[in-house]
Length: 78
Image (tube, rainbow, N blue to C red):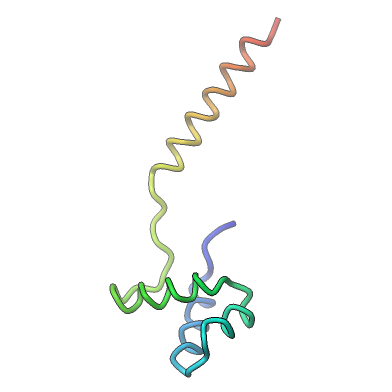
């Protein structure tokens, strides 16, 4: 699953500012209560609400897994 859209983030924070609780927002927008709190905390601490840049770890981990799979498949071929 990808990152939530900037539009969704903006709507959630607008409703948060209007006084809705995290539980209400989570149910209304079908997101987790923890995500609502993290989004609000990030806005408070950094002023940013957009999705964060994905780290390189996933690409490295994926490369390791596909390399192992290729090696495994290569050894199994007769």
